[in-house]
Amino acid sequence: MALAPGETNEAFIREVDENLRRSQAEDFAKRYATWIIAGVVLFLAAVAAFLFWRNQQAQEAQQHSEQFAAILTDISQQRTADVPQRLGTLAEEGNDAFKGAALLTRAAVALQNGNRQAAIADYRAVVEDKGIPQADRDAALVRGTQLEFDSMKPEDVIVRLQELAKPESAWYGTAGEMTAMAMLKQNRRAEAARLFAAIGADANVPDPIRRRAAQVAGSLGVDATARAPAAR
Image (cartoon, rainbow, N blue to C red; front, side):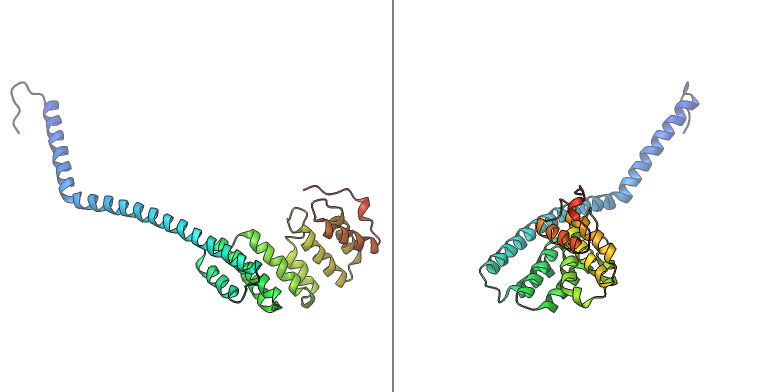
């Protein structure tokens, strides 16, 4: 391009640069317009899919909640013939929270019907499923151990319950009591007595367990009433 009279090199360079940028923009638009439009469409589709999925999840959760409520109503009215099957379906189709609740309920129904092995199997399934809420898994661990206690080795009971047999645990009373009983089976009387006394003195432990633990501690020569209640 020839320079006009009086035109500076800087003005020429600026004009060339502007023409180049305009040409690049037009070329980019021609080459990638289809891809840009496709990307926007995909993004909008993804947003729509997510909103649809969330709506479906909410609807399914409501449906499962209604199903679970109906099952509990039938249990309360002693209509339990098809309850295990319905709870099994709910455990398969529901989210992790419903799965945990369904399996815990099915275990309780099985135990009520005298089927200990079925109850134990359901409790184990809850404990082993890391997707189920921890509170449900802890409950299953304690309940399952109660059913298996007599057939377990004392050391296995102690190891299984070690995280729950602590004052900060919501299951301290029950898990601690079984741990102390396992210690007695190992002839660790002094340790068992101290644990029973600690449970008996803990104001956060349910009263029936506290009273029972205090009585056992007393029979082992430790006065639980002399201990200050442990606050949690």
